[in-house]
Image (cartoon, rainbow, N blue to C red):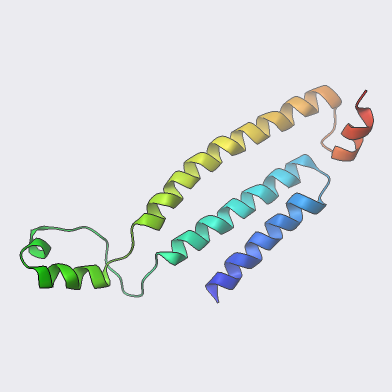
Length: 120
């Protein structure tokens, strides 16, 4: 069920990015899609009653203890990917917003249909 909710969130963002004519709403739709993908990646690494993947000396004493720890530890790779994706999406969001501001300064509107008509 949580995967379906993540997919629904992605579809809502896709709808905003494709159907809406306002550039700010398109940027928000792209942001919603990025959040849906990040949520999906976090859910992939989730394990019920999992523990943080921090290995200390007690887990390194025997192979059996380490194997038991690995079987209950949460996967840290999706968390690292999401942290990286958050930083990248922040940079791309800043770029998209700055492009929207520059287009608004030049054309005086956020509507993409009017901007296409104003092209000379």
